[in-house]
Image 1 (cartoon, one colour):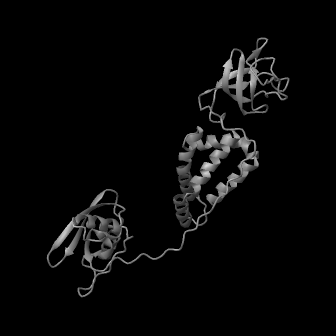
Image 2 (cartoon, rainbow, N blue to C red; image 1 turned 45 degrees about the vertical axis):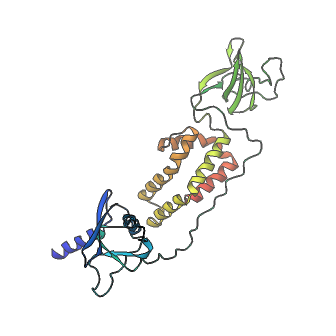
Image 3 (cartoon, rainbow, N blue to C red; image 1 turned 180 degrees about the vertical axis):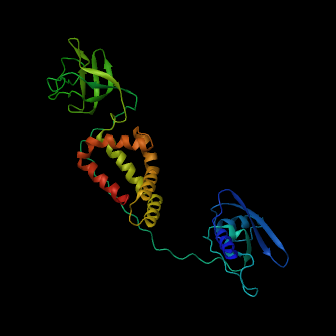
Length: 317
């Protein structure tokens, strides 16, 4: 029982300090009984504590690189106790420390970090610009021309203006540039047909286009799809993200199992949560599902496929 109690005490001594503030008492001179106390937060390091100690000296004479800290009472009386490295995270056993004349040991020189370098796809030439509308703005869907492959499109407002060679396909979704009388000036979002032009709202009492409120999926043009992928690539390539992913893979070398997959999903969502709302999707698991659904018809695009490969490389998939 005594050994078990000692083992629990030793474990408690090296346990990281929990969140919140803690008081650390530092002995400056044991012979004179000179001490000072510093309040630090859980997760602080020895260097954080030394900076607070130096700040207590109003003369500015104390330099954090000219002294060290050690656990009070550790080591032979004739020798200075082992000095704690500046990078040491303070734990329960560090609530009673003493200063030493020996500075903290210099940290070992770490090998240079290596991070993957993604290369997003080159944009296709002649790609229509992203829509100017937002989610909830007025848009239109083509419902006429079922038996003719779509509806007529003209270059101008007048019905006598030049007729474009291709029809705007039934089911196409467009954003509204202007409505003048029975004529709609549109910019195409999805479907086949001219990218821009003028169409009639109805003809001979038959409705050709119906109004609708635009959704994130409606507005997800190829240009926006590529932009979203590029934003994700930049986010996943950030060094802080890659470090976090490397730590996760080190904990789960096989990169499998429910625990690993759940933690990786949570990590990936930290980037998706920043990016997705810019494109009208929620920054949540639900938004990710909506985004993936919107990508459906875009996966046939070579550039989308290339970017997806770059994302998988960054996520070690």
